[in-house]
Image (cartoon, rainbow, N blue to C red):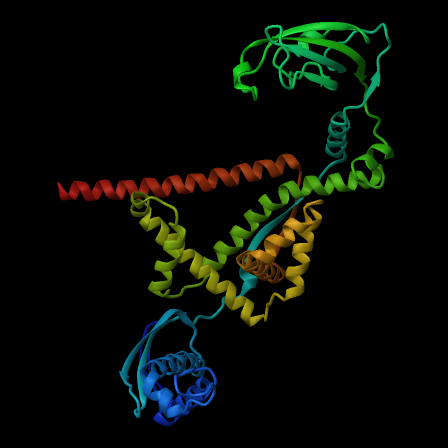
Length: 455
């Protein structure tokens, strides 16, 4: 096989490839021999059909299949031989081919741009760390304690009031008749929450244990039996027990109840939880700053076909009129994404950054730990969706590159309070939305000027 570059202009390269007829004949002979054991023809025993007969019957189809295979193999080798980084799908143009002839063809392709990485040390950014004070941790634990619904029995003389848990049996009738689902045993209601039937709770206030009470109320609109919806029903209720809420003691027992080893361990877990609530948002600000600096510090030409492909991905799911309206914006975003991606990949290649299978496995195991009881569902999701694994690999790869970049740049680590973190996130959101709004205004002003000129 002979390969030579016939032209090179910008990111476009043309290759000329020649595969000699002896190589093609050898491949044809191998294919005919392979088919000898598979082809069944009348008058011949299985596996005994001569290659010449196979050729006479299926020659054109076999030749086409062999040429297709040679094109795929030789074009990949030609690109590899010339060490070309291809952007998009190459175009192949056959010049000469046919049985007994050399295969002569050209490959027209766009390449990825070559560029020199700028020193990472020039990048400066801030990485935020949340300083969670003890007061905030204590407040969160108090909220957990309040949510535990800790109740003790009221005495026989004490009446039910808002916030109490009332336990009762009932039998209901509508228009004096029984209906399906009209009985209940040991029903628990926390009075004041109105979670049973609207208005039911307030009729159970002021009652004592073992007392009976007829509750007259309209069944809800969404009652399963449509013929009973909005109809009046009378519930004959017997109060089995009344419990009053008591403050849950904040101690090791509470900590164990919510999955911690003890109260000290719970405080550590709460601190980590609060920190993680802000970590992603603040991390996204740092990441955006790094990527913007990387993108601005590198100047490179981009293959038009890649820009077009990326713009199509960005506009997926949009209406036709919205695609046209956002065309310039989508192309600009596509260019930024491609440029940033190329710079990140170059950094990864220079530093031999790779993601192995064990890292993917560890990440899946981490996800499983955060979803107790749903382990099988998570595993099935990744086993049945190869694209999900590919997406996970991509996310881990980018994360690894960013961690490498952080180790080389000037990274100012700054501790912030929760209040400061909230303000930083608020300012970032406002800044992003303002920038988008300004871009849209400039675009509209430009359109207005064009219209005025046309007038």
